[in-house]
Length: 327
Image (tube, rainbow, N blue to C red; front, side):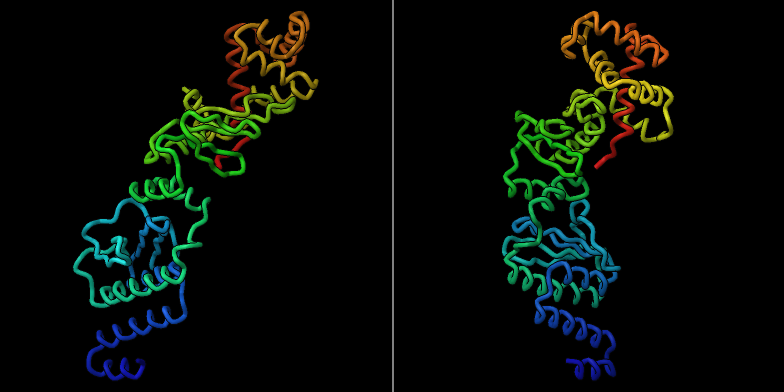
């Protein structure tokens, strides 16, 4: 093949390059190159992005000319040249306007042949594990049809919520299922599977307002995006200005004075009355009153009045936001 390329080079440089491309991909087939390597090579040789979409086997690859990879973004343009890689009609796409050069056309054809061989060798297995496939379902950059196809293959419910956990992982639960309570969790809105990226965004926002639920980090362990209201704006505002907040600093100093301070203030912030707060803390009403008097002295503002209670609620919320990051 190399000798043929040399001979052709004397007659037709373009034909010689085409023969070299054919030889290149034939060698990749012989060496059983994997799908990602083939697609990356096609992008490098063609000088434009190349993508493979095979929802049947959960294979979604997009490579740039520098051989870097990223999730396919949006639906393929019908004007792009493509070659089918299986009977289901799944295709290898060259992200370029027609007409393409002879080199690009040869790259696309031979790369498709190499992709077919790679898929046959692997049976489509091992391309993505469950967690990686779920990442694609939650990625708004992936074409909607592909996301829905993957979600169906994963057996996800038609209407679901995404749960964001502090380790950065995600779970998808049925819209009417209970969220996990053994760990801090933000729960997104219930949406059709095509809209799971938006539920994931809301879940991560809600996670920012969760707490461990103990003496040093009191607050709710599970927060639903449906219930955030204006607090969603507060999260974004805190992220835009990450500087110290005086009331949060004062809250931290007050919390260091006694073990019950933060839990007592959190109970007051969440309760609808002082007696309700006392029940949450399992203390007598008079004990709560004494604690709040001490708390007001430490904070420097009244917490039993509406304005002071709102100030406390905001300080506690900002404290949680600043202690967490978006997964």
